[in-house]
Image 1: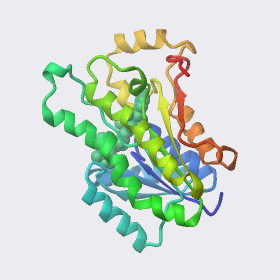
Image 2: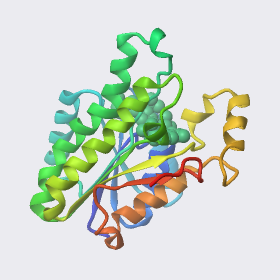
Image 3: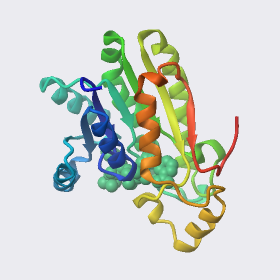
Image 4: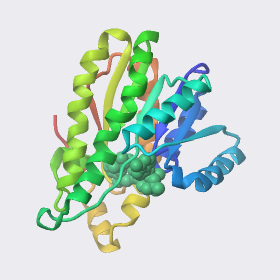
Length: 248
Ligand code: NDP
């Protein structure tokens, strides 16, 4: 895969960071997308990765803003960078029951977790199709499949990713570009470390495999979906949840 280039949004977060490192190990030229305000943290992160003998580049954008993504894509094009692989991984939670959920927290979660997929993907999908090869992988959530108390915004956004994925997969199937989503269960990152410990323990007890997932569990699935071995998988949602939610 030496000639492939990957762009990973949320690239310096928990799952994104493991994904960037895995794809770099797979031989790809990797760009980790971070929020513009996180530039210093992203530089530091890059240096830590470099010390492990891996090279990952960084690029800034706010994925909740279409204009920011247009600028980011233009900057990459100017550098001659055109991703063959796009991993839409940026996401946030802003949990509140519906009666307490103000419009700004609804919009923040929908824009960051769902509209972002449109903002970023539309910058690169046509070029992938013209080249006849591409991989678009969006990180959804088990809570988009089953719902979760206090997460109408997040569950709506994550379920929406599946509709986007199935529709775009049909548009690009004949062009060598596969489009899939992954629905992680509970993965041990900053996002879940914010959950109170007593609830985290209850969650872990309800996972048949007996542990929270690791970012690498998702990175390995992404690596597989990028491989030639996965070229017949498109429009699919892959659950990676330790048996926490089983369906067909
Ligand atoms: P993290 O919070 O560690 O990573 C998310 C990353 O996205 C952060 O680096 C964050 O930056 C970045 N980000 C947030 N908003 C924007 C934005 N507007 N533009 C650009 N980047 C942004 O979370 P995880 O690694 O756990 O989550 C990754 C994905 O996996 C998310 O989509 C999440 O919903 C999904 N997921 C996670 C699960 C889990 O259990 N951890 C379970 C199921 C799904 P900053 O830190 O500055 O906000």
